[in-house]
Amino acid sequence: MNSNIQDNTLTRRPEARGFRVEQLLQEASDGKLRVPAFQRPLRWKSKSVIDFFDSVRRGFPVGELLLSRDHAKAATVSFGPVAIESKEQPSALWVVDGQQRVTALVATLLRKEETPRGDFWSIWFDLHSQEFMFLQKREAPPTWIPLNVLSDSVRQLKWIRNWSFSETRDDLVDRALELGKSIREYEIPAYIVEGASESVLRMIFTRVNTGGVDMRESEIFEALYGDEGDKPIRSAVARLCDLGFGQLDEDLFLRCLRVTCGLSRRETIDASTDLPPDSISRTETAFRRAINCITLSAGIPHWKLLPYRLPLIALTAFYDTFPNDDPRIDRLAAKWIWRGALTGDHEDVTDARVNRLVKQMRESKNPYDAVISLLSHFNNNDLLALQKNDPLREIDEKISLNRASGKIFVLGMLANCPNRQTGPIQSSLFDDVEDETTGEESATLDTKRFYRSLTDEGNLGSDCVIRISGMEKREFMSSDEQTLSSFLLNRECIEHLSNDEIEDFRNTRRSILERYLQRFVADRLGDRVDVRPSITSIKAVQ
Image 1: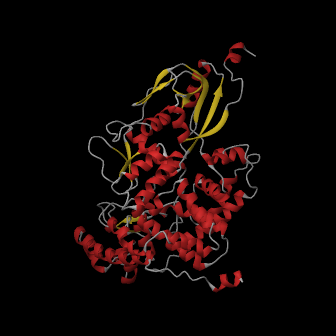
Image 2: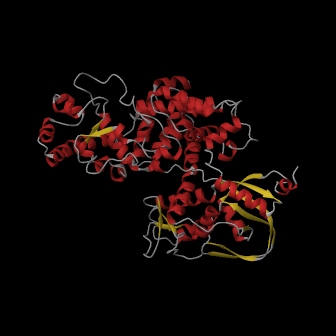
Image 3: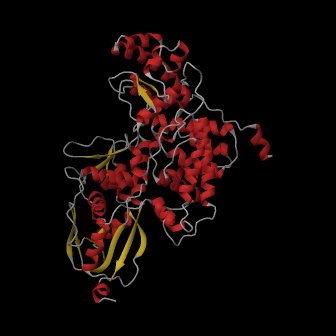
């Protein structure tokens, strides 16, 4: 072997392990976490830091760290505004790849100020809106919590005790505790190399940062567990297309598999882990039941119109635990889906939240107890007041399917069963909706394929109707009252359109939509739920 190649080769395989955020913070506090001189300057601004923490909170993958274990001299180690006096370390961890992420964690969570503000790492979390915020100069609103108090549970509890809402807002206190736990316990995968020279580390750093596109988690899974080129997840997702729910994201299926089979993210990308032999088929079966509930009972025909992903993940685990086919259970689950969508409660899809829901369901004696435990989270008296995603707001706004309220608005129009004058639509309204969404790109949807505007002045909610393939604007002009009513229109609307009286059209359509959507929302929320078990289930128990 060429001597130059020998000099630039690792003598042992890298160690693969995971670090919880609290472990990384402890390593940094102890002076064991170091940054080599060849690292590039910090590039992340406040938005990147906020997106990173939002991904951690939601349980999204944030990439691996690459660390080198080696000797380090005593030094002052800086992570943004945080300076740590570090003693000599015989076995320090040098950050070869992941400097921006490590700095975001240390600079945000280990800073000492009571009111961090003014730099990229002055990140807070609004417990009311559940959004990460950057504080520059002003005073923080009372519902904001600084992320640096989340670095350890004792510090967080002290902050909560002195907080103005500690005695009056149990919901916000619970949300704060959940946030701290989800961040501290989030695990970041890492590779650790030992005995590498600086030239080897520079070579690794260059190749990692210029070597191409990162693999998705599902691609890693299939590379590890696929048999001779088989793609088990891709095949399962392809089979699920026969339900007409659209081409689902493969990483979403993998997350459902993890939840259903009780596996951590590390276990599904660790070649040494023995997966349950039926993990794919088991998840696919439960996934199929969850989709049927969402489409048939909740009336959500396509996954791009699902306001939040939480129901799909949680219900896959639910139907894996309770596989019996009971329409009443499906109706109760649909009520839970809609209450979570309209109130915004299902926006939180962190691993901690999902694991808590699944544990709650699996501790139940039967499916009725399980689904009622989900519904008990909502106070019937507060439902109408807590509508974060009221579709009425979309009437005078440009519709966006990147907002839950926009999806709910479209679902409301669909629920009125729009049909052409020639007769009911025989095939799916979405037969020609293309499914080309993969990974993060799926956040940008081709919304024109779900609805169309009847005016030339934008996509305000009041302008739009459900899009039916081949049905042009001129067909509405000659439609009968029954057809117009199915599209939430009337003859007065059409006359205003014909005369190009756009504002008059919008005013008339607004009144129609307001009356209809109020009834739609009230029906989806429901003022009471029938929790009595069915006769079939009683007989099954006996």
